Length: 186
Image (tube, rainbow, N blue to C red; front, side, top):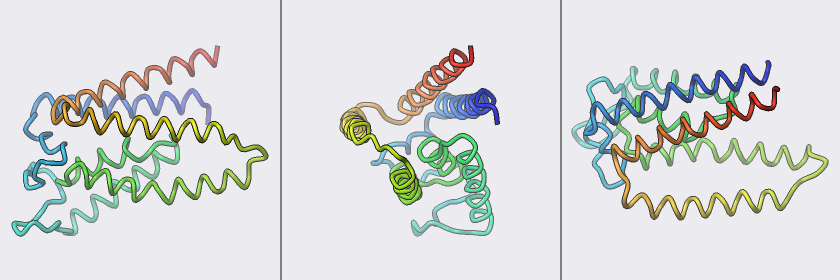
């Protein structure tokens, strides 16, 4: 498939997610109040397929199971086409389908991503004729610094503003990727 078509498809997906997140944060800020770890997972919009029972246990009813499986198929398909998943697709879909709090959605995403990433990394190491160790070190250090900075900033940005900030970040990063691809093509 042509790389420009893939990038433009990714851009449409990213913009859809960003607009949906921005609208959700703007139109019903109380619904995104559970975005921080300290908030209770007991707040649920009626349209969510997966809910907690009155006893606080996650209910896996047939509609919930079907919704999560359908979401997984869509995430897998989009991940295969665009090479994205994790926080970009898994976390938003878990938050839209269920009333899981953000920390559990992120933990679930990491549990899914870890073995997939590890197997891809090991495959690359064995297949690649050259392996750039310094690039790996730089990416790892960047990730650690970003995690520390994000943990610090999360104390000051929460709920509605955090979701809107994430939506703007998606638009900015997507715009850079599309512009870069268009410049490469010319």
